[in-house]
Length: 230
Image (cartoon, rainbow, N blue to C red; front, side, top):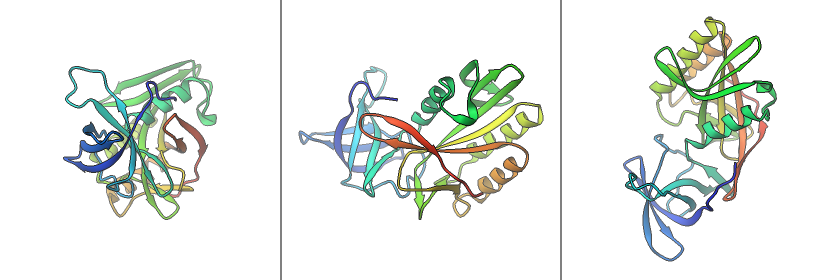
């Protein structure tokens, strides 16, 4: 996916109240941007680091910008948690993910039981639910999820297990928005319940597909599948 209109460069002053970030633009002015990432943003937060914002033309929004990415450890890290859902939807729709090819119907935000899952896909003989998570935390050469306790994430795992039990294909896609990692795994030290839930889901037939995305101020593109260890 490409950014249109073009992004606006700046430097991070601080992130606060979880959903806000003050950014100094190139002309010296300071703006407040919306931070979609509700996690700790551990290993992808550094005051003074270069960032990019997307402009927002919505009179209902209190902030006129959305924080998209930050330059950490020699590369861009995508922190907008809404991007992975769109990226995965487009890739499944266009047949660009090898394990998820061939679907003739692909829809976003479909309710199942008491959850709303990110993607529903269908083809003759197969119905599939896909949940997508954004991954930004780096620990050694591992991308880890989650970076804060996630009761909602655990609920999604249980929903996928139930979908699998009812005959659906069930898939967890983890979009790793940084290039300085080579493997994926659950952050058991941060959220042991989620890590245990992911192992259980995998044993019950929920597929795990970690995908690495290359992030730049011009576009974000899925480049490869990462090996994982649960």
